Image (tube, rainbow, N blue to C red; front, top):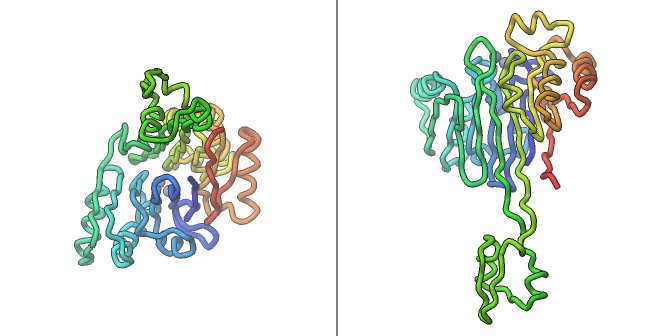
Length: 308
Ligand SMILES: [Zn+2]
Ligand SMILES: [Zn+2]
């Protein structure tokens, strides 16, 4: 599991930072990439990474501001052109369907794969046996969502040595034991499978939030998260500006991380007024409040290790 930032700027593309797109690489977990937002030229950014568009399985759109969606039509079309045949689902606020369908139909784009568009509300927007994604509305003037990606706990590993020590040989019975069932052996002995399975491996939690002012929903989404990705459009001295434009300062992002008990904070969506070393100011301000903070740059990546 790894986060790869494709665009980390706010509003308009800048030389140093393209507009927002974040990839959650789930190659080991499901052989797939998930995308959060898809600003203009995201597909150009992808060309400079190892991401394969045909591997993109889900795209979560936080909100419909152009700097978060103008890259979608191009990417969706190119994915088809580049041999993408597996289904793809786009999740986003009401209006995302009209945007995609209009762009595809007026440009005579033909997709060779099954494209689903899901207009979301708050709650669980995606769930299967390994992951769940929960959405909540933030505070951004237009409907803007944050997403909490929850990896489900994995069952513990089978304690093979312990079984062998009792003379229980590998076979179909190992499957039963691994499920924690009570099993009767050939000689009549009854064993409790739970005693032969290690502790469950905790799943990881990643919160990726859309543009927002400081708000309670952010804290709920980021509760105990391994990683919180939060916008930091402005420095602390511009907190009034941040409020007026429904954005956050780096310090406010850090306060969310503290109150949520998150383990790591990654700042993104940086205004182009903070170029080069100036952006370090945001990092310093946030670290004063929440030390384990990083400032994302385009193409920076962060591995998310499983808790021991
Ligand atoms: Zn934005
Ligand atoms: Zn916005």
